[in-house]
Image 1 (cartoon, rainbow, N blue to C red):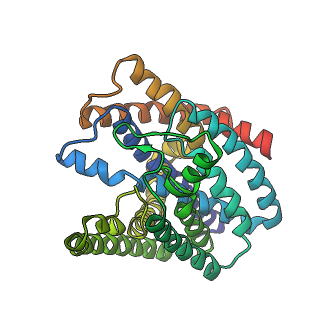
Image 2 (image 1 turned 60 degrees about the vertical axis):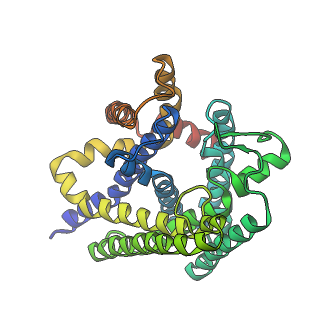
Image 3 (image 1 turned 135 degrees about the vertical axis):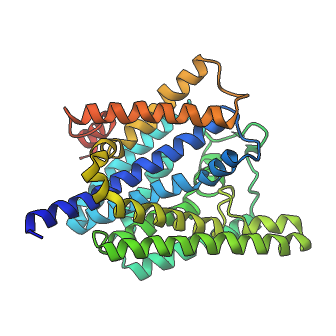
Length: 354
């Protein structure tokens, strides 16, 4: 293989990260549309499959953000830290604006993931691993000591007091949809993954295998321990759940496993998809996920509201609406990328934050 062909293959494989972002985006749209359209019940195969995406798609997104941050840090640590801190402020502002129309916003959490991630970026993998373990253990202590239900009305998923100092901090670090403790751990895992040779096929295979083992181990342990704990006290079963709320250690383990599977598989198939022309179609959307995330709220959910489809819909309708929106978003991103290097919101962030 010539040097030019080898470089092209490596470029295709790293474009697999854009593909992974695209896959995670589609999963997040399905989850959010399903909740917004009130299609949360049911035990059909489609219901089971979509429930499996809950918390996993978002976790994969955060792991990928960590990989991106780690790769940038390898190219230049000091500059990466400075730029990341400014982008964190940008995401905080955009996320808080988004919170006024979408209570489950993740962008303001991202701001703090990046803030702490940038500060921890100089640490080695062992230290980062210790921080991940510490975050999970500390969260368990918080759940046992503090009131996890504080602020929540679980009937309609509304949160009281978010805009107060106490409520904001509590939601941000403890009992929000994606609390910094322990969700920061996903970003730190991504940073650790960025430091291995992701372009090597053997690494990608190992990543998939490791992900399958972690995911299966978490789910199996949860299934066994839930039965044992429920016999002692039903509330103890919450400590070993793999559901995203609350994000207990086994959920984090399952989320890391799912992210490893998605990243590894996308890197593995990137060369084949490039030859088929599909990577060229899908990768632009993976590079514009910030724009598309905001669009799925403003345009996607806005359209659903205009059509009277927020609430009382089936899972099949929610999935159909999600895939229709994602198809339109994919086409838009492909056309936009023919004329512009970055998506509109990504370009705005770069102009403001560097």
